[in-house]
Image (tube, rainbow, N blue to C red; front, side, top):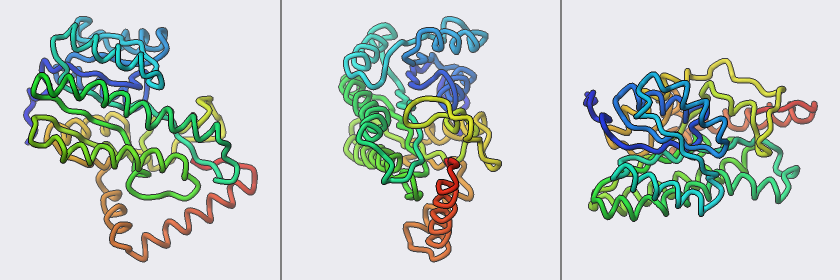
Length: 279
């Protein structure tokens, strides 16, 4: 059973906090008594998001302006937060972009954009936070990967590369720092009802994409994530069923999972051939 007071008074940074999973995690942290620095690059959007959550206590919601693709801004933002609050208990490296595109249509600029946003932002965050957490003797880094970071969906080579990278990095650090007071967790969301379905590599809205019918409610996702983080779980699949079985089936070479992925490739190939889009 999760300690209801586990997050009470804990100092947390959440990147990509303007919307989606980041916003939901921020709200759930506030419900559980945490102090939350909501990070994003748009001053207006961060202020609006923080304002929406100010009912939980204006002194516990702090806007943090930083572009996660800029190392200097991430370093300064994390260091200043720890200095102001006196410590840093949890860092949620959550900011990211999606990307479903035929491999042969991807440009090198597409690769650079998704790698800068989904991998380098996490590296910058970990690089800044770990020395602080080591010095204070405690801390927990939570990096958002994806179900595509443990199972390879067709037509998501760019996205999956970045998310496998996040998973691998986080798992390595989990073992490396296990005896030094630091914890690391990887969030692997499947279809969650968030605006990421209307945003792709270029960061622009794409109206032809839509949230899948089976998407898991984002508030339930945030609650599950924080329960598992409090348990210091490593890889956190959201929702746990049926996606944990999908992951295990892929790893073990289950023929049904193999056929499911092949069928997904056929469906997506057909959709792109017709000029449509498929997340």
